[in-house]
Image 1 (cartoon, helix red, strand yellow):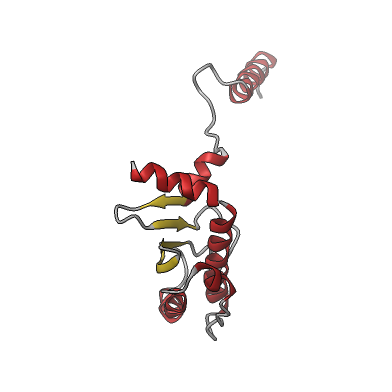
Image 2: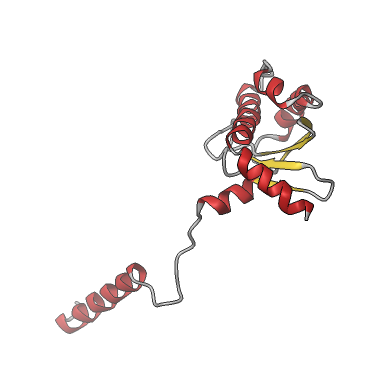
Length: 158
């Protein structure tokens, strides 16, 4: 049996622990993601001047069969020049089946790419739909963040 003194000590330690979490000591803060950080995690330029849109953050609610299926979409001179599937938990055989649909967007200008009607692959419908939705969300992101894209390109030119 735990004595009253021991119970009181346990309660005080627990209380102090909770206070330490709620009110951290100066200099210790919880990581916070602000909009600017998210933009620059999503948008980047590579050394060839290609704009890269990474859908890991913006597509975090788009699920294939197993989990999210993030992509990197490479854009140059207003066209999609490459799409790369990032590491994911989809079954490799299904990814092999659907990876070919990425080619349907290669070389297509951005406005046409958003309107392109790409069919899901039978037998890998969830994964296909996740890829299609990720391409769409990346293009929507591009069109809604043109100001950030231009500033990123200006910074890279300097």
